[in-house]
Structures are given as C-alpha cells and as structure tokens.
Amino acid sequence: KAIKLIFNKQNTSTEKGQQYRVFPNPVEDVLNIQHTQIEEINLINQEGKIVLSREFSSAVDSINLSLLPIPAGTYFLNVQGKTSNHTE
Image (cartoon, rainbow, N blue to C red; front, side):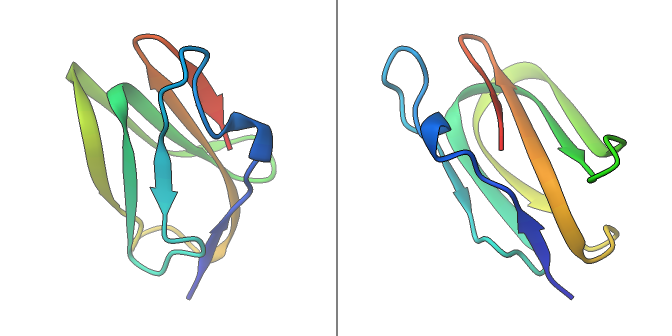
C-alpha cells in the first residue's frame, strides 16, 4: 500500500524562514515530519474528513507518525506549530 501526500511547493518554509521536512512521499508505514515547535498534525482525505489527528502538550521538533491503519490513497497533511500553519 502507498499513501501519497499532496504538496504545495510554496509552503516549504515558514514566514520566518524556518525550514520543515516531510518524508518519504509516498509513504508506506511511517511518515517523518521535521519542523520547529509542532503542536498539532491532521491527515485529511480528499473528501475533507480528518482521518488522523495528533496534538502535543508541548511543542516538538520531529515526529515519526505510523500510517499503517490508514488506507492507501492521496491525503492532505496539515501541520500546525507555534509560529505557523501549513497544509500540504
């Protein structure tokens, strides 16, 4: 199975120039997200339904997110941080 994330190439950095990384794409089991001060992550299907959501009590800089229970398909990834909000 493969899960493909849709990327908006304009959103490769935050307003303050901080870089973030989301890899691999497509992903088969574990998605890696690196960004400063991640507070919430939402995986959204093409119908606009949130299929996976994670909130963090304190901001983190990297996440290894298991997508094994998620069916194969194409999804949007929304990463919210203290200083930015990105939808991919």
